Image 1 (cartoon, helix red, strand yellow):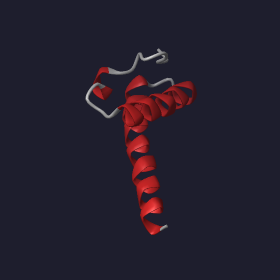
Image 2 (cartoon, rainbow, N blue to C red):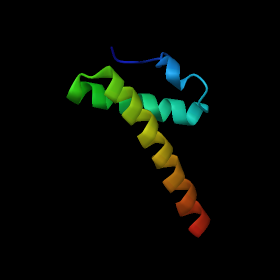
Image 3 (tube, one colour):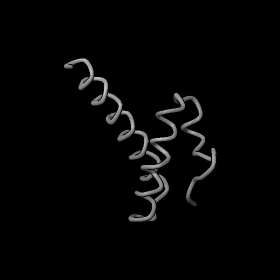
Image 4 (cartoon, rainbow, N blue to C red):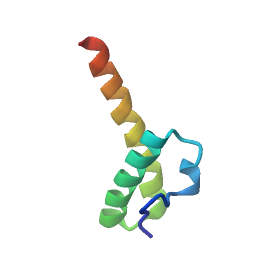
Length: 62
């Protein structure tokens, strides 16, 4: 089941809003390709955290 309009997996509940939104976006894409909700949720959260960690590192180098 894809997640939209503030609907997101319960495991994202305590995440900061920007991570939760990015994770949901990524999870929806993974869900389209694999059809596996568990994999989509885990991958979405992991990749969202990596995205913002890289973004933070890039800003620190500037």
